[in-house]
Length: 234
Length: 234
Image (cartoon, each protein chain N blue to C red):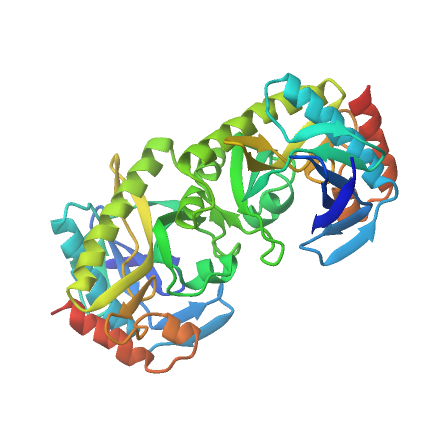
């Protein structure tokens, strides 16, 4: 397989087209950003860790009945994925209060919620991924009601699967965001599932094992990503 | 009826208890604030205009089948209302793009939407009334699913009634927010419907006839509120 031109460069990844039909290559960078790009940095080896983590999780999710864009891990930093038409809606799950939710609502991190929250944001770096709701999705034509229903149902399935997955590895899955894309009449889970896009707290110590270590300058960033990788690959 | 102590002072109104059972007095101030209280000012006679506007609209909505907290207008600035247990969820309707929606989504004011948007915000001055969704309402115990469904249905009925009402008066109803409260096992429309809490554009000239004149220093603020009052009382 030959890598052709770069189709997209995001904050943590690049996407390249290839000479193989319906196959792109996702390249995992070490770059890290936070607060809508206001904070920038590098987490050494993050790309390597995240590629391994995401690959393992995609395989696990596929085995659990979730259709994803994952084809295979190609190298340390490269993953082969199907070509998606990205849906510009991020789906976020919150199992307990944390992060932007806590800040916006004035509710202390770690506070229990009466139920799991599913929320949506508009995928837009310049606008800072603003929160939206179902009506926004339809009013702006971002997805159809059937598509959105499917995405939310898949997200709740992923929450169950991933909560169990991390629980068995001594980690509490606090929250995460997913992205989906259209592919030959189906909707597939796209993007990645890594400590860049979720919150993971050690069940025993409460220690944060995710990008909050970078956002909040908590130190041991690389070590935490490596720890998550090791537990994911257990 | 005797006015007793002040129960609440908001940005534009005060609420007093009275010696009459289940009767409060809502007092309309001339104070105006915008941008979460960062901008402060006075709109002369606004309290008088808004009391007249809200009273007329409550009567119209009651006639249209909407149950409200309105009892009667008592004086220039005072309205008698039933005592509500306020639900901390504001319900917003957007018929076209404007205001915070336009800013947050990067969509020009006046842009048509494929459908009307209903959105929710958490009623909290210190937090700046952050946007929430249905799951937030349940996760935080702000209202039950039955209550929220009822509030949304009532809001869409109000949108139809008020769009027709203003349309007949040469005004386009762009967006508005409503507040509800619990009262003897029912949910009643509370607060007010005035140019402080909605956007009204003259159908012929496109001129703004609402609080945006204050927010954006467009001048003729008092004249616009008086114009709306006169058309409402037509």
